[in-house]
Length: 346
Image 1 (cartoon, rainbow, N blue to C red):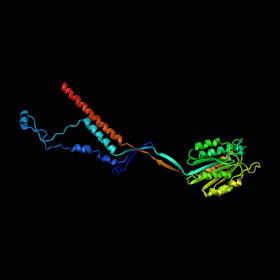
Image 2 (image 1 turned 180 degrees about the vertical axis):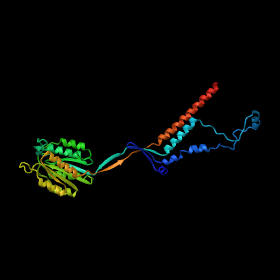
Image 3 (image 1 turned 120 degrees about the horizontal axis):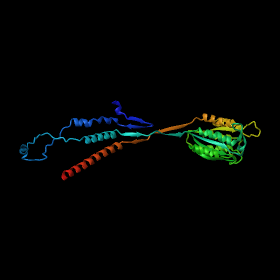
Image 4 (image 1 turned 90 degrees about the horizontal axis):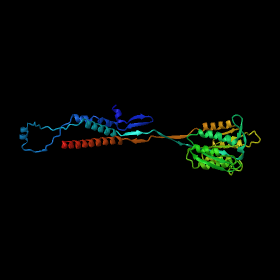
């Protein structure tokens, strides 16, 4: 018990806590009793009143005399108030602190850029949805990417689209709801009919230049072949590798279909050069499975910071002590005033 007096006391209150930083101060609690137990009257060498005939007066009146001092009695209410004030003073001296509930913040350590092909071919309705109903390629892609975004808590996400050129829709942000909202608004053909994969990778590299995250990942989905990029896809992939950017590629389509023009060889080369993975999906469920695999591959990477705000409480017992003393003195003054008036009227 004595050892614990030299260490803070903490009482959990739900997720918060009450702490006494210096509980050893409570050892002074018996001090008023010790002073009362061993008190001595105050002695003075000076005469408060000098009367040459005091002895004769005392003898004539029969008043007993003594040389000891007089200790004025303390009323029970007064003693109780002084005791409460002493307790309040001790509590303030122990430095009570209210420890708030912990505030937790996750600091992302990965920036992940989602790059989506919105060329005119993405409007083709040939992707089998659950139940066999064919849906547009863009609809299947949005569904799989939206599910992927929901699982990426702790990452900063960005969104870019490409067609005749590459365009940034959302810079890296922790506001995943915003990214999902922008994703839902993309439509095939808004960026033109062509498919410039190399330029899309180049845009991602430029965006990552301002990133300070230790992990930089790009997930690129397309259903076609690069057509007229200013930078060939494989050249852009080599630059991405030099900048520390990993590119995962997703091919949407069926290469055995003569109408399909998805260039799986180039997409595989991009992934191989940058250290990423490449996958092919022709059905809606297959596409979702690909993004689930990517989600498992790119484990969540974030740093958690926890802070517990503290509020000093010493002013509350000090305020209570001051209020008690004020009420006591004010009450005593009122009582003395009333008693004096009563005597005069009597």
